[in-house]
Amino acid sequence: MVEYQQILNTIYERLRVVKNKGEVAHYISELATVDPTNFGIYLNRIKGDNFCVGNWDIPFSIQSISKVLSFAKAFSLQKNKVFNRLDVEPSGNPFNHMALLELENGIPRNPFINSGAIVIADILVSELENPKQDFLNYVRDITNDPTIDFDVKVAVSEAETGYNNYAAANLLKSFGNLQNDVEEVLDFYFHQCAIAMNCKQLSDAFYLFANRGKCMRGIAHLTTNQVKRINAIMLTCGFYDEAGEFAFEVGLPGKSGVGGGIVALLPNEFTITCWSPGLNEKGNSLLGMQALELFTTETKQSIF
Ligand SMILES: NC(=O)CC[C@H](N)C(=O)O
Image 1 (cartoon, rainbow, N blue to C red):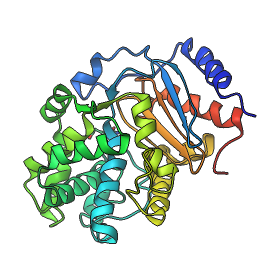
Image 2 (cartoon, protein in one colour):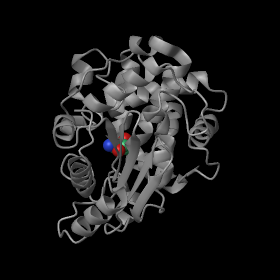
Image 3 (cartoon, rainbow, N blue to C red):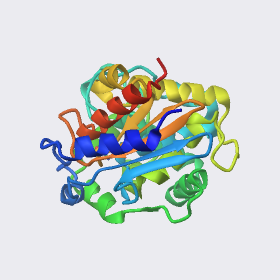
Image 4 (cartoon, rainbow, N blue to C red):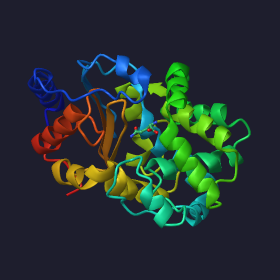
């Protein structure tokens, strides 16, 4: 019998006193205002029990974690057709790296780097009737929580300094891999990244990836085969040029965001979300990585 609550408490007490908590993201000005001492964890077990510690109930900007949810929606709508426009290889580069995109003729390496997520945003802008609202409703639906919303201030502040993403979108457009208007696609992308959720809501949203495609209400949103593929991409590409390190230290599929959140999961067992806004130099939550390493080591639960 694993003492989950005790393990979470120990991790929390040990890490919250650590002096070096990393740096909050500054390139999106709204994210620079977040208190770096926030730290929370929420564990959601498929069996039905859950455990939490710290600031698990404070909403934060999910940023790149949204890329898994947008990809899941596009994959369920277009099936394998999505792979005509992007690949599933780790990039070994930062999330906003540009040179590979040009070398590889506008085909992004995977859906979890920015250029890949912008292609997925383009697909959703084409497929959905009211793209932003319909996507938000999808996230609310899989999480079973109608209170989830965009933090519009974050979306606006990212648009103001989103030069790199404008460059990526324009490059995609020049290669013919963007069907809609650059402005419209990026407006969607900045909003999906600006969804605010807390650790519980993220663990609930990702439940379907640990439960063969069925959300907490038992509704199937993805096939077992699609979930296998999404989890594989999370494992190999979820942490950019630190994906190998995360697999090595933690041993779970997962996804990070520059808001300081990390969600990880063990199929058929649990989803877990950590939030600590300070990032390491690769843009992943510094304490979040350490917390999850301790968690899988202490519980002896990982995919390996
Ligand atoms: N790694 C991230 O969370 C990056 C997402 C952010 N919205 C960006 O496009 O730069």
